[in-house]
Image 1: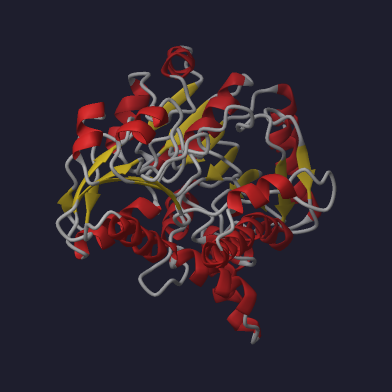
Image 2: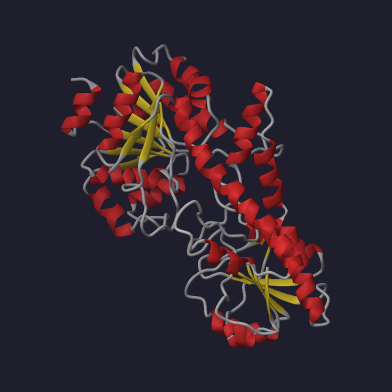
Length: 431
């Protein structure tokens, strides 16, 4: 029986390499469709949690995970030889930047190398990690073929970018359309068959490179538009114009416009990183992505602007930043999640410290906050602690926070997210 037949009749076994914020939800959706899933990760801690039915990903309820583990539909292990039992394997590992802001593909390479000795005829490999165009065929394919099997003859290989938005209450793995591009048309067909088993909408494209570029386009689109808002924010501050009001007015136009918002800087696993992946690859073609790179510079500079505005706000109250007690309110990279990756709060806090501020933080989702190896003390979030601080700096606008209390009790508030839109006063400053 061939791969397509095994996928269609439900007997295909799926493997997932990397059980983080992408891989674990993917494994759960595969299992919910009735397929046995082998989850593979080098972290013994993650494997132990999965075996115990405890989810470490907020978007995956522990009860749901436990039921699938108890039913034998999800098996988790650090033993990569178990990948030999899989008919299809999805690679979902990190793709960070190195210290020179060049792509670090080592996680992908190690994952592909780990499963290569156990590949067999008629197996499908999909790469979900966000990366530059050409990665699947230039890096992953040679590693897989080193074992003797050939893509297009013995193996199927495709790229299907993850589109996870942590904490999104509406769009999750199952109902977010899945883009798929294979090395060959048959590879695309196999990947479409795989994902159609548990994803509502699958969108095939012409190649792996087209699929890789699709994900970068999505995130670069957001990056450059946020950079535009961040630049306009600084201009509007000089012109004494409230950009937040301007955006609210502009979004009433029902065509030709969609709103983006300024903020303290970019965060998360994709948007701050992905533009650099494309810019790096573009140089291979003697092309400089000046517009994309400029947007990255604008966004990276925002923490400096935030601290400058904090200084100005305190100066209006005849206080220096040095020696002032500042509560950083919200340190996750976006609202209502616990994810700290690339959070602008890290750089903001470091700059506050460098300028002599006495900082503490409050974030209901983040139990510990460490900046440059030094823990930032967590403070109770009460009217008394807010009132006793020299300033409150809103970096992440979690819902459920009593912003009215902040507006009424804080001596000075700098709001980088328009969280205090409903309030006004001489103590409230907008970014």
